[in-house]
Image (tube, helix red, strand yellow):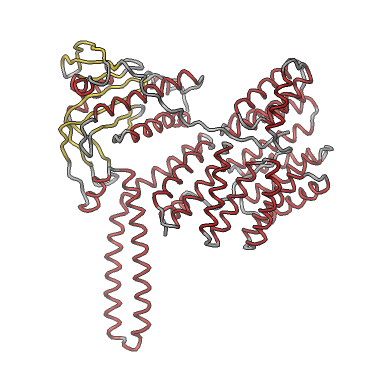
Length: 621
């Protein structure tokens, strides 16, 4: 059993074939570029139609497309045009969905439907219900998805817009395909395909071909599946429908993987990832990364598989709603903690295996007539058991290294416990968000978890860059150490550089986003000796103790918003590289008067933009 294969099953990964909602029209960035030149001077109905076309066709800059939809909404309200108001909300919802903001998308689709109902715009009402159903299907809320699909189709059957009806039928079929109801999916695809064929709707025919290929693959007819999917890709390429192309390339990779043609599977998965990354398609990036993780793991490239799997997690969570992010985070946390006991279980299994082998050997001595058969079965059992033990041990080692420092994990495996070590010189950093406790009282648990995870994920990335060791988080407080488990001379400077990046990151988020994540942060740093080790015998936790930790915490509580407060011992180690402001001696609780300094040149290190990604819009009206 492979490391990541069992993990995929644990997380409920059933199929690599994701939900592919079909747009009514093919996007065209060239059209958007041309129409943008006409926008200046356009007024009234002409401007509203230009804004609708621009919000749909703009694919290079999803935020610009969102701006176009917002302007369309405001202009429609000004002229009391309910049809364009419905279209504006529909386009806004489509962009929010591509940005991963599923709750905002649903709100926009509801407003689109309400405007369409008030204006007697049946096609718009049906399109809004269909878009809402697509989002519920993405959330795996099957009951709500089928409810809204039913409402959309019933409405659209009364309209004269056959293409919109076919689009809705296609998306219902795609929903049932996602949940492995292949016969029901085929019925909807067949009806949609007849309409697409009758109206000569090229992109619709391509998607029908691709999804029939997916059904053939699930039923074991791989050659017919590959032929259909390749034909779909060839149709979509001149239309520049990169979302569909990337998704169908992932499907091809999955087919070749099941045929054990790993080189070909890797080729298609890499193509899918390259296209998805180039066009900011988060869902397809997530799927391609997961495919590449599985394929590299099959080839024995454990490190590459792990990196691809981490990228899959990042993009998967970025398109999930808050509830699902929290649920998956809980699953991952519980899974990782439970694996710490795996070593003991494996040792017990080894002992049981040895006992079984000894008994089998004794019996074999008395059953001479069955010796050949007994030896064969015993050998097969031994080899199977060894493979299981080796593979499970490799998975356990990998997970243990993610939780504890490598040397500590090695000592724990060899001796079943960890000896505490004294480090004469390390630097300890504490951070704390200003006013977080009061702020958190007004938030739901889901929003609180999302906010803390947003910042701490970036902090983790920064300290890993400088080779520092994260110790723990307590509420909104974050603690890390430089100089252990391996002693280094420049740990104080690395800690200060990491602190500068952390403060700069928090300030940039506060300056650039009008969101609930606007915080200020205090940082405290102190250098001294500590004792480090693992406490307890279950659910191990690597921690540090000593007066140095307490003083570092006092440095943080005596800091100020947006400032890095350091002690005299830290100042002595960094003063040749960093300009500091002497604050004088300050009375510290239980410590008396202590010299403190603010690090002044905090913005000399530029922080990379965090978590930026552009999504590609393939849904329109």
